[in-house]
Amino acid sequence: MSGAIRAFVMVQFSTQPSSSVKVSDALAVYVPSDGQPLVFNSSLGELVVSSYDRIFEQGFSAEEEQIFFTHLHNSVATPCIFVGLGKKDLITTDLLRRASALMARKAEENNITAISFYPAVVKSAIQSTQAIVEGIALGTYEFMQFKSKKKPSKKLHSATLLYDNPLEKDTFSKGIEKGKIFSESTILARDWINSPPSDMTPAKMVRLARQLNSKHLRVKVLNKRQMEKLGMGALLGVSRGSHEPPYFVHLHYKPASPPKKRIALCGKGITFDSGGLSLKPAASMETMKYDMAGAATVISVFNALSKLKPNVEVHGLTPLTENMPGGHALKPGDVVRSLSGKTIEVLNTDAEGRLVLADTLVYAQRQKVDEIVDVATLTGACVIALGPNMAAVMGTSSKLIERLHVAASLCGEKLWELPLENSYKSHIKSSVADIKNIGKPMTAGTIIGGLFLKEFVGEKTSWAHIDMASIGWTSERTSLSAVGATGAMVRTLLGYVLSHN
Ligand code: BES
Ligand code: ZN
Ligand code: ZN
Image 1: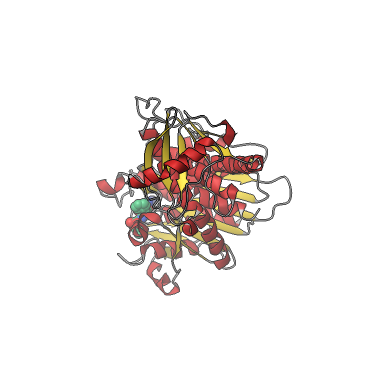
Image 2: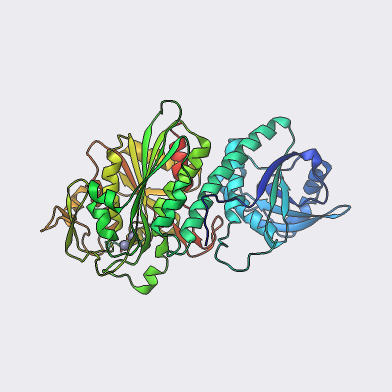
């Protein structure tokens, strides 16, 4: 199977003056529950308003995310999707995103391939159109690469944003551009994460990452020998049971002018986590191809950086390996020496993410950056603690964590801060090595993961750890995601990087 770095948003987005809309065009209309439908200036717009009483009688009350498909009676029947937004004052860009996703899917259900609408706006018009574009692009995403029958034309191909005033055209176009880049990178991460684990190997991820190499974006790759020379004993320990060679990818985006900030983004890249000799039960292994979601997220962010060219220097660091039980695999009780020199007693080979990230965080600090953020599907405990709609964040800098909170909320993702409780440090004391890789059974698993990583971060380093095990994968369809990889945290990290710009 071939795979390319390019992910495509299937829907084409464009702007048109509202005067050009034709009665035969399918329309979407955003409606607050305590107001009138938001329409453009034209006779068709007037028809929407005059038809609204009938729609209301038929049961549409414009509650949040309520979607209603009907035909407007005209010289021809105009297909029209009403999109509920709830109370005017409570509308957020995130609601626009989710409602637009549902609208786009309703269009597809009704064989509509092209849709026109006047975008609803809350606060910023650019941010609102960006959110609408993301909703449509992400909500209609499906992973088809491994289906032998590609779905026929029952897809939405085009979305036209109508404007009344030529001044709006420019704003809408800017929002579209940003929305496309944010969606494309999210889709890229989804495609990679959804790919079968024997396809998306460390070597394959390296091949794909290399395609990002360009003037301002350098891609450096360390192979096993180079990692041995450096002393990445923790990462190499994890890879020992696998036949697939491990790699370490170092992406480096450097803007043309002196950067406002220097950041390192680190992403856990276990392309398959069997647990190693501490083997996972079969059911827990079913989705473990998504254990490289952190790395896919980081690489996807760089895909966007090369287009958005912010004035921020960014390092992307991804340790890539499988975690397998082989004859050479790490055994519970083994001791590995990390890049910092600290020794780790590996009592459970399934707690491998913290091992590969330990070396990565040490490497990150050598890049002389101002802030370090790591993203990882680190603990099952995170899934249990927070459920499917929020990721855990912890770290050494409240300013950095606040910035991440803001970035997340702007793109409709949620972070919940957990404490790096000092008194639990005793749980990872080892009688043999400097530290061990697990704490006490069933006790603060996500915090212990964070505390372990903190052991590899200097006292003065601004660092945040995002445990995205809870949100990286969805077993049920959501408004923005099909079953499988969600592409979560790509947009948050991108927003975070851009917030320094
Ligand atoms: N990749 C898993 C964490 C995970 C579990 C992610 C479920 C997504 C869904 C990680 O490597 C792991 O297995 N962690 C162990 C740690 C334990 C042995 C201390 C866990 O969470 O059980
Ligand atoms: Zn594991
Ligand atoms: Zn893992």
